[in-house]
Image 1 (cartoon, one colour):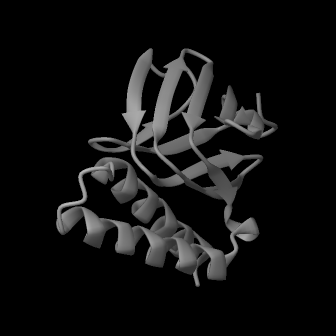
Image 2 (cartoon, one colour; image 1 turned 135 degrees about the horizontal axis):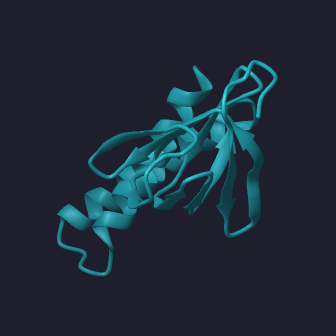
Amino acid sequence: MAETGTRTFSLSVVTPEGAAYEGEAERLVVPGDAGEIGVLARHAPLVAMLRAGEIRIKSGGEWQSFAAGPGYFKVQRDRAIVLVDDAVRAEDIDVEQARREIEEAEALLERAEAGDEEIDRWRVEQRLRHAQNKLEVSGR
């Protein structure tokens, strides 16, 4: 329980490289496939698919933002787990790298539209969205 009396829940944001966030949270907002999903303690059980987007976590009265790739989300009464391809804290985003990722994804999409059937269009679109999201989350 937070000092202010606000209920908290245990939260893990996990990527293939390991935990990007582990701790108590007061609020969580994730990019659900059909729109944003907000979570507080004692949320109804839920499993959802996530699109690339911004994950926002309120902990200790402060908000943290992550640019995240696609993945899945599970919430129980006082526990939430976010499993995503990638999650980068806003302050750790390499803006130039994100711009290169956008250029690469756009080039792959052009090839897909030209008939290259070996390109998984959905994955490339998610990569593009994630790279664009990094720029948005970084604020630059």
